[in-house]
Length: 221
Ligand code: MG
Ligand code: ZN
Image 1 (tube, rainbow, N blue to C red):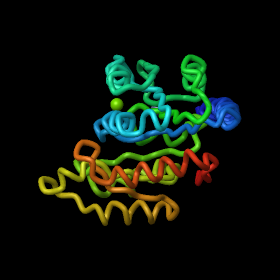
Image 2: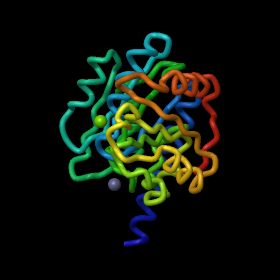
Image 3: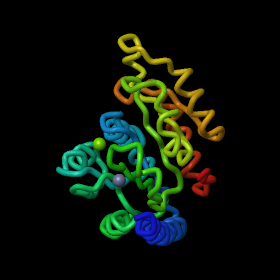
Image 4: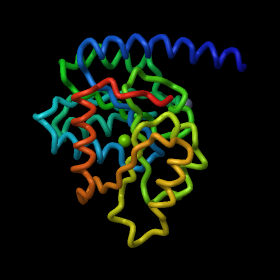
């Protein structure tokens, strides 16, 4: 079982390496958005598309077990999107992303946002050829999540703490959450945002523009 798992991951890593090389040549910035279900990945992407297009060409690969609801939302926001349904699967793998890239054919300078299946466990293991993983947590979850799911924190370069507009109604210590993430991964950067109200988005866009300018951001995994 362990050998089989290793073979699956080795095959995935080979394809991911190929994707990373091709996207670098094409000057396409791929970001892998990971979170639990309901942390607000799609809402965040809708907002990014509305605010940054056409300055930045944005395309989205949507991963969900079923339906194309999120791809439809992304298209309504104004970006091209391909929906990947994983069926019983609980994460995207590099071969799914390779097929979606073929379909999207992103132009040079584009931001390719990959919205992974909502899951904090195996997306940490599957390299999709992205430059960075962006971990989205929300204040309606537990503020100790970074300690409970350290692998995904270690694999990520940016923590976006979303839904801070709800802080008056929930018991969530943002400092504690960010401190726990820093203990697991001292190099992770953190931003506090509300994708619906707009708090902190200027900082997120500054980060995105910096990545678009220098897409070889160091991978910490
Ligand atoms: Mg979604
Ligand atoms: Zn999985």
